Image (cartoon, rainbow, N blue to C red; front, side, top):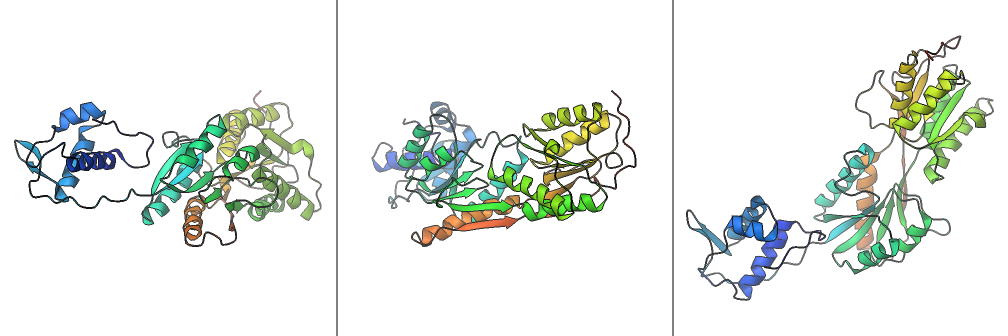
Length: 373
């Protein structure tokens, strides 16, 4: 029997149903004859028995098959073939991760959840397409995939790759991605964190902090530039000149933040507060470093995160909340609108972020606490 396509956006049970319909229509399975049993068919196709059973049950409900207890599953003798259903269309998610690697990235897990809920509501399937080299091969495969009705390009900042994607025939939208320089060529759904980041840093200044560090990514994305710009603007709004030495560009992960902050504390060069502009994970790393050096947050060090993806922390993390699920759902809606009006002007939506004051910020200490080092 023909094998199923693991790269198709259609679930295996749907593919199996179409395969069985085709074989029955061709007369390979005659009326009143038995189909292979679930165990044999599952072994032949490399499927689970539950997948085969679901296909049998649904085809039985549709009137094509009948299941006889103790005997098996048979083709109905009086069945008149129905018109073949058109394959369901899918939205493609183009990203540097796949559906099996989302558990380690809570931000993108939530963003994909927003996409999934909106696409299900619209009756569309989802197909994840992982970004791999060579990019030209991926773009060629996307071009050939007739099931993809539209593309959501998630978390991409490489302008060369984006220009390749811009030539595809499917409507597309950038979601949490940086548009390439030049005239707009994509629909865009992004967040604007500048007002909320500035509010967070200004709150630290109002608490009395004049020595505020920023932990941001080593990259040069539009989001990194946004947050650095807001950090600088907050200082200047209060008559303070931002110190370039307080800009710490690091690999955006908790362990890198931990190592950076711990070293600064040990060397006596730590500021009184940090804004962690590349995610809440950096804030957790900074808080852990302070704890391991005998410092307490917020008594000895105030910390602000970015994202609001941390469920628990001690103390509860002050952060800039990003509209994560809304980014995904809005990206789907932009595509749905584009399907209805293909020649309409490009859409650009910037969703606001929100400053959330919690327990990880306080007035600075009068003197710097000692390090355990």
